[in-house]
Image (tube, rainbow, N blue to C red; front, side):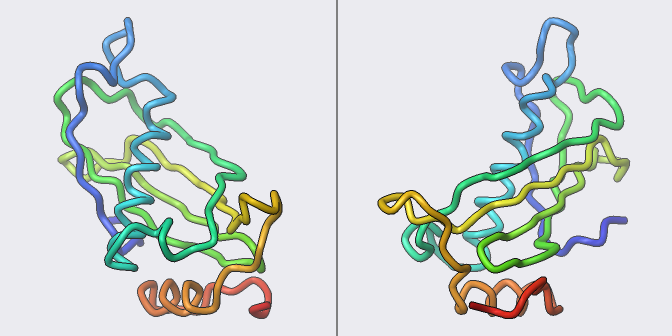
Length: 144
């Protein structure tokens, strides 16, 4: 069983698959992105872009465990694993209906001021809400 609290369920669509008859590797990143935005809505109750200065994806990676076929149902389990001064790190596990892991991913997002073109500190309210939801201190550094 996964260690994450948040779950986002999805159905593999025909368009997600490539000529080899399985989900294309790039689509797993879309699955993780969908889960991240659902996670933010769970935490904030509305669209996060209205409350954070901005988010930009700084890094992402995915380990593929087994191919996923059309029409499978998946659960993306996701959680915040660390909060830095300007960054939020998240990990995920994607499981099939039997509970077997099909992929594991990581993402680092940066709170970002798009008009200034530079990172900004993670807001105190966001840090507090994430840590409350996750049930633990996630700070890698003291809040700015």
